[in-house]
Image (cartoon, rainbow, N blue to C red):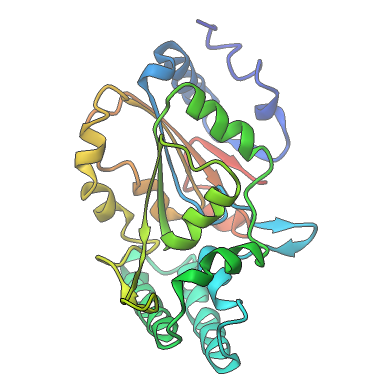
Length: 277
């Protein structure tokens, strides 16, 4: 096992100027614990939008799973304008550094509910999802092949917990060739009628601020992985910090936060490592 003075220094990724480590000593301890436990004790719990997927590419903002649908050619201009107005109103609330999560919560629910309602009115055909994703600008982060391939090779469970649209998410990783058997997706999945047209969304709404509740509802999944007590958690929002709350026997957890466009706001929130990619 590497000694604690050298574990992080041996990893060039941690030496980049784009990586902020608030408590290097604590990170050293966690990484050494992950190394000691090996693949057999590890699991990955991750957000998707702007975490596994790119935030931007060549200076242009990349779409989220919701944006992929919002911007597709099957959505009417009137609907697209309404969706944009909702985003302009509620996104400012989501990232407001003054408001508490409790204060933001009802507004975010309102945003998702209204947006999903508009999409349902469009009666999107399930058969077009593959084409919609192919024609979009959504893309996974650089190095995704190695990331997913290694996790599959060592049979490390990957739990993707997304407040986006699950059907789009699955199509993205399927088209990228990395939807392996070790990957489980929990998200907002579309519900289609007998004609294959969107009529609603399945189950309870998952949004950026209720991932604690969603994690607890997936305790059966985590209980099956009771020996996987070491966790690498990836996210880009405050709510993502709660994604491992359903894991009862955490031994070591490394939290990695992608700051994207909220550097000054969230640099104090993710206590271990913050990556600006």
